[in-house]
Image 1 (cartoon, rainbow, N blue to C red):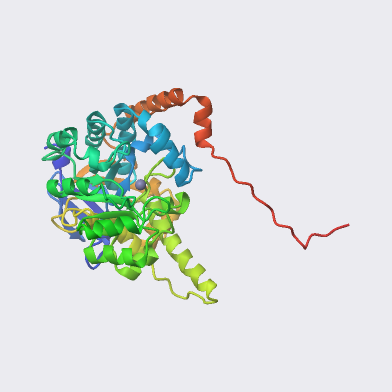
Image 2: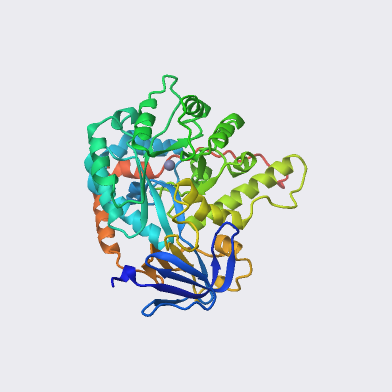
Length: 468
Ligand SMILES: [Zn+2]
């Protein structure tokens, strides 16, 4: 029996099943057999030889799902912390993105994939828009396949129009070789629709339709994509229930209605929208239109693969907006619309639904794949008492409290340590990529890229200062 086939039982935790009625089981056990959830309950009997994991004092929940992350950019972790979208576009799209070789895409993807499973993010969409050649695409997939998480490749290439790369024999060949019947959890096509009235992206949508794959697109991004892109998609019949609209922050009510009517979902990347400037995180709008939500962390060139941050940031932003709007009308918000429970749902079930994987992952119910996270840290004063479990996950817990992670029943992290994952290799490869890029850019450009100019701040004249 290989380790991944061994039954596992997590014992005596507070189980957030995230099933349709959000059933909670305190003092609960989760039994995993043949890689799937076999049973959730109390005092369960485990088969002989099962791995027993003591979840006492912890929270057991489904693995989290990130529906949009540019994983190749993790090689530049934190470099763009002070960027706006403008600096991002200049650095990656115009100037330096084309410097990335296949081994650099591999390095970023490898580190990002390991970061995901370490953080309890068991499914991650690699919104991979640095695939300049088939070698880059092979490298991206090689890295994802080297890490025991669940990954969806969203194929893109910012160096060409989507109508160009999607029409190439290279792309078709890659799809046949690596995707059709391959090991990844899924495949999407990733491209944006800036609103050219000639709608050249039509050809790429037709390829997606032909291959039977979904499209993920950065929509409603201030200064980049807008209502015109949505209108063109709608009028040509390319808005479907499996379409994922990333950000969808700067759109008119009409566009939200088109999204709602065609059944698509929005991937909200709150840390990104707040820092880069795509628009205000749109959950307050999505709620009004009944549009399904998943969460994402976008890119580690600014932020990190931390879905706790996504949940917390999203709840903060929604409530901040509600208070600010009320105060503008001289009113007081006495009850919040958005609850912690809802953002935990978005980080699990919401992602599963967005990716068409809701029968497989996203909840701890019998028959689903056993993607399980145990949040437990007996050394942390912040893990006691657990009174409001959803609130605890959102506002108290953090990545360092991710104790154990299972993907498809395989233990990939136990007792706070990754299992069977070669972080040293990922570090060495990322270091080589960083060294190569520093050389390629030169010291001056490297520093300039990381440190955009600060606009002048004019301190207001203050009439209350004492004078002699
Ligand atoms: Zn993005």
